[in-house]
Length: 178
Image: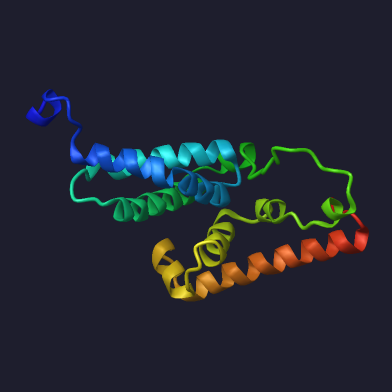
């Protein structure tokens, strides 16, 4: 136990973690939710990312730099999980279950459920779309983040958007919107 810990004060890295969770915890969980499509997985991803980030590197972080590391850890953890286990993909479908039930109004029936459409995509397509449209990253930045070529990222973006558009068109023509 260090002298700082014996004196009852927390080390600097613990204060950074506490402030990060307090100030940016909801945003990190929301980001993980968009990546994973599941509230339970989102909470686990944030927890795993915090452990990975602060388990090895504890000094020299600011809240902003720590958030960037944690976001990167969330994304890589999710991609690694889906890549590692095909069995996991069969069991834990990327299902988003809304907290509230549907309302009987015409507006809610016509509303486009993007979460449902994201659920239907592959993990890499989903990651590319979330990074592009939620994180507002450029193709080259997404490629660097996911360690893919820019052409592959463009393909995932194109395929993901095409699948979502086709599904939405199908829902509108069949009247199966919601």
